[in-house]
Length: 208
Image (cartoon, rainbow, N blue to C red; front, side, top):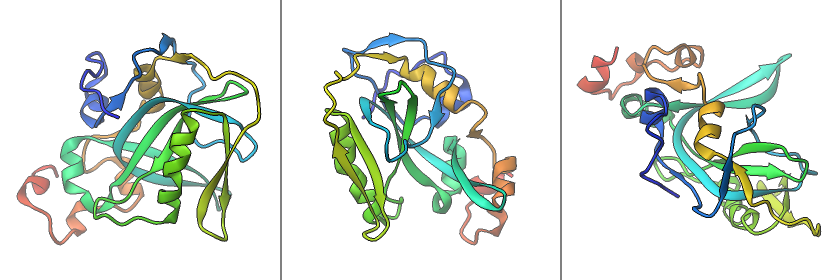
């Protein structure tokens, strides 16, 4: 979903990195909780989506702890940086979500790459997004078939009609996670160096 009426008070870096967010007009707003996270839920958690979503070009940092994968962290890219890092961009959609335990999150959905490449994991998320708009669901990973599977919950709990302000959630979740230059520390840590790209253009070189 897209909405051109983005919050003009959003800081410049986040505003220039945002490619769109949609807001259902019938949703009530209230302050975003400080515990916002960008993460999926466990296979046992029941959750639903509000219908608010934010599509963005990102760089993903796979964080390790004790030598093992721990989590993914997502960094937004301002437009000028996007133009220079086309091959490294990971298109994402972040869905406003809540679990039955009251854990509000931005639920990450990986989209096909800019060159059109996709896979069964990406494709299996599409019906899940639709289902989460209308019901409480659970999601698990099927490693044998390389896809996500979902089940509709039997709970009689009504879907929420009172959600945090989506723009505030985005600002909180992505505070300090906007890459606005080609020499950003995150790019250096990930070994992404524009000078190593063969097909860079003059505009990208000017950013150095």
